[in-house]
Amino acid sequence: MKDSDLSSLIRLNIGGKKFFTTIDTLTRREPDSMLAAMFSGRHTVCQDAEKGYVFVDRDGKHFRHILNWLRDGVVPTLSDSDYSELIREAEYYQLLGLIEGISPVLNKRKEEEDSCAELTRTDIIKCIQSERVRFRGVNLSGLDLSKLDLSFVDFSFASLKNVFFSRANLQCAKFRDVDAEGSIFHNATLRECEFTGANLRGALLAGANLQSANLQDACLIACSFCGADLRSAHLQSADLTDANLEGANLEGANLKGAKLSNANLKGANLQRAYLRHVNLRDTHLEGAKLDGANLLGAIR
Figure 1 (cartoon, rainbow, N blue to C red):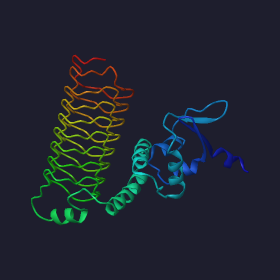
Figure 2: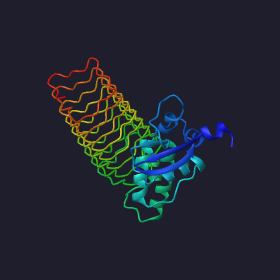
Figure 3: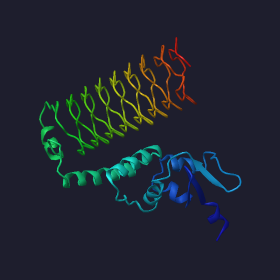
Figure 4: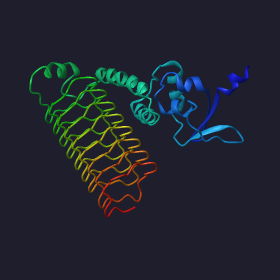
């Protein structure tokens, strides 16, 4: 074996589970992922000097599925609960291709079962061809509404649990008091949307455009906003406990009264954000930009 081949081999320790792979596997299929960035040569990784393992502090249960995806591009066959766990891991590693690959698999499975949703994707497409669309109070749980133009649609009070809105255009849509727990909005356009009082617990909004969105009083516990655009967003009294906002742009956002316990704001842009009297003691702010932020009375 050539020295160059040996240098491309990588030993990984994912939460105590050991894996052996190559730089090519980690960087080729998803070049914009966190894993690709780690092993691109642009960053220094933490390596065990004695055994040469790179440690990542995540649950290694599903990492073999992630490696197989990166090698072959095949989505594994799993239970719904395991898919949910795999999506969370894929979100952490920013494997957007894997997340999009899981969506149609889950959607097909739901279509084969007795669906509790009152409408289908086809019904939704027919409806949005009219000028004024309202799905107020309608149960759309589990539907795949990805990549649709749903701008200005009124979903207020609807049940939207585990709905796939990936890459959908939802500009100015209304989600007032919806139950959208576990829904996926990654890379969706949500500019000027209204989410007041909404339940978005555990939702995935990585890479979403939420500029000037209204999320006042929303439950955003354990949500992921990695790399999301939240400039000038209204987050007053929102519950962001355990939320992941790493690398998010919150410039000019209003976080008055927001709960940020154990929230991850590493590398986030909080310039000119309103953080008066906000408790930041248990918030992770390493590398965050706070220039011009209003921190009067904030607890740090």
